[in-house]
Amino acid sequence: MLNFYPGPAKVYPEVRTYMTDAYDQGILGAPHRGEQFVQLSRATVGLIKRKLNIPEDYYIFFTSSATECWEILIQSLTKHKSYHIYNGSFGEKWCDYAKKLRPKSEGIAFDLNEPMPVEQLNISADTELICFTQNETSNGTQVSATTILNLHNRYRDTLIAVDATSSMAGLNLKIIKADIWFASVQKCFGLPSGLGVMVCSPRAIFRAKQIAERGHYNSLVGMYEKMLNYQTTHTPNVLGIYLLRRMLEDRPFIKGLEQELVDRSAMLYEFFGQLPDMQLLVENEEVRSKTVVAIQASERLVDDIKKRALHHNIRLGNGYGPWARTTFRVANFPAILNEEYEELKRFFLHYYS
Image 1: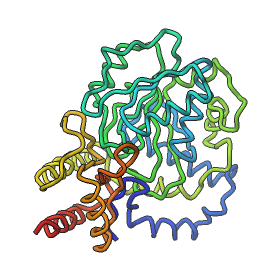
Image 2: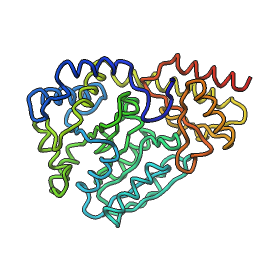
Image 3: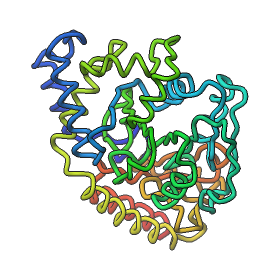
């Protein structure tokens, strides 16, 4: 089965060997307070920083998912409200969830074919956390590094949190331009779901200590205190962390990976943009995602293409949210081989022949 679903996505084939090694090395039964886990955690944190180009003074935390990070950040870094900027379903869900915890939280939606309207934002001084999704999986858009820099420069005194679920470990993110970045590993990391990675600046940790919120199992200040010794507040996904370490050991540095994905995304957009009865959902090239390609067509055509593809052992991504019935999505993640995209192209060319 060729898997182009944008998460959970194709895992690296080496994962099979990694899992066998984990069993043989006793990782699956390793105590999470023991030295074996501490060494594993320390090594993994070091690799995350080196391979993903993360500043040395930033802190790394392990969670169950990116969705859990939404909760941790609102609980531990806000007393009153956060501000959410979104153009798709996942950014909007983060906003809706924040309002359940902090009813004064605010959000603004912008068009999927427009850049984030940084100059038009009116974020009040009492906002404690600005939140957005760097790569919106639901519609195949992204927020550029330049836009993030502009937001950072305009609101220097406010913490900025970025959901990078569909781009971390695929793109060379400018980590220093925001305070918190997080992702789940079932996309660009090429690993099974069940593990999240959260990256926090010294300023974010300072703010967490100021608020000193300790009312939840994964309160950020408690997570920070445990990770000083490379431990977690909870019994973690030890296997997931081991797989993450092994994957990072075997993967190139993020700068090289990013260039491969950027080049391949250009090929995919050019290919799908020329197919009859289809159009790219995101018309503005400036805001198109490099890791999730969204293609729009009639509901009938989308349904037929997905069924025919599955018959040929090709799994395409369903549409999501408002675009659920009229789009399909194609993941452009590092674990997927160039030859697999060539086979995908052959399928579509045969479909129209």
